Image (tube, rainbow, N blue to C red; front, side):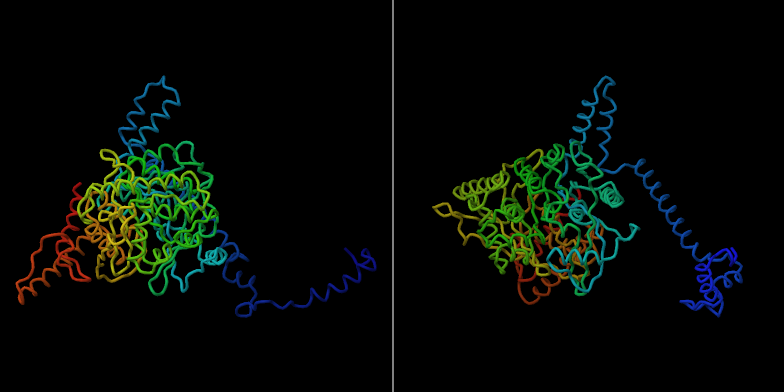
Length: 589
């Protein structure tokens, strides 16, 4: 363009632009050593602005490497399918041996029946709450309201992409601990078809835990609707721990689209020996589905072990121990499961919240008393499954009254047959009721219905309920995450194999103590070898103490029950020997 062709207005603009182009513009960031970035790049022998292209090339390389890892992982999954998606070798042979004239419906029914029969031998089965834990060190714990917890979670770091920093958690802690103690263990829950879900299935399979994934069953949720739960485990400066996940922010269950449990899941529960259920299941599944699992266990003879966990705080909205609110279904269900369960494991803090009694002795008594109350609450509009759970309490009360009248409710620590599942299925409510209040380093307070007596009017006698303190073990505590789940696994072992309550509590305290000496949960829970080493160390200490006391006196015998000759805060040698025999019997079985 020439000045003559621009016109008057363009000429004015040109006059203003020429001085600006001729004047050097100040740089926002001075170039290094007085040279601009263009000349500096030319002097290095590189193309101009190559430093802007390098991050993009690195991102492309990272994406290519990530895709390659995903393809390798998918190839490995095709070659080695996860435990939950496989059937036993015999089941596969039966499916392959079916004639070609069989219809697709018949083949699917045969495969479903073979899959259910392959999962029929679990002695311990966990229900729901399968997740992946990501450990995070924090200075403060989050507040209790949903809005504060949402802001707290959003400020936490995103889970790292490499699985080196992941660990299975939730009910997987119970499953791994039970498998290590010698129980045939399965995990029934929901895992998405994502990296976290495949990681969980691989880890549980390596630990010998059979995975029963709800999304793999027919007529269940679709894969694209399910994501594996990721839970942040918050580690405080004083050794305390908390949990933070997206479930804390939701008012409804994460998988509320599941109307009921698939038939294969109910069959697995019916054939199990002990079903482990905790309060976090209500965050994942609707209350009707959780109640269906609990009722399926009770009706089929499977023992129900319930741990309300931190979700016990939902009970406080019910307005006192005897009150019921029609609007709070989760709180009512948590409380009713505490009564209907054959075994209730709860911490002293949780027991104080649920019952209003800070004294663990009184809290254990009231949980036991209301477990033998036949009358259903009438101040709320109950669901059908709630009334069915109340019927479990009525059946237990009737059986206990009959046993008390016949004089069969004597020694609370004597061996009893609490086994369930195939081969021996006691009727619902015919087993002993156990309540274990966990006291941390001090051990646990235990109470059994075996010593329960009833008055002439049919009401239970409060004086017949005498909780027993079972002391803990002295260890160097590193982390308490997973201690309650591993404690429950040992309780399941003792209840399933018919051991006494106090003897079982000694082993449970030892397993929980060993778990506390390691950081994290999942694969960091106690092994059988660690528990044996701790018990043998205590046995040596008791032997040294006894030999030193014999130098000053004639000493005592070592027979009788496990509580004999146990001073406050110590274990008897008989109790430790029984705990060791429980481990050896479980490993050989």
